Length: 78
Image (cartoon, rainbow, N blue to C red; front, top):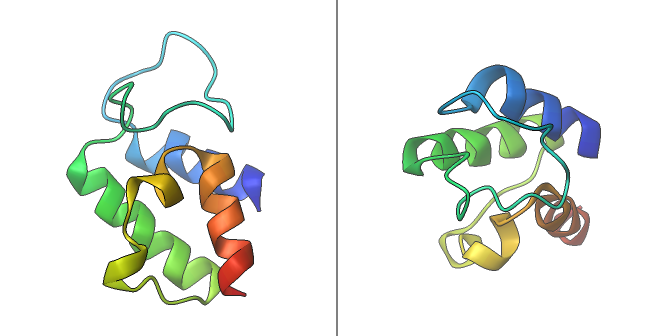
């Protein structure tokens, strides 16, 4: 699951090229890896790929700050 999300971000959503490898604990928002549109696209990808529903109350930074956070969030929804 983690690798699928990392690859999707690297291949589809990066705003700019990274100087270093994207890790599962990299801050996606604070380091400007994803902009707001990228985050919306990532949430849509997560919903479709992992067959979960992200409710408005789930859209908090704690659930989507890092890939590790996203994986933990998905695990709570499945």
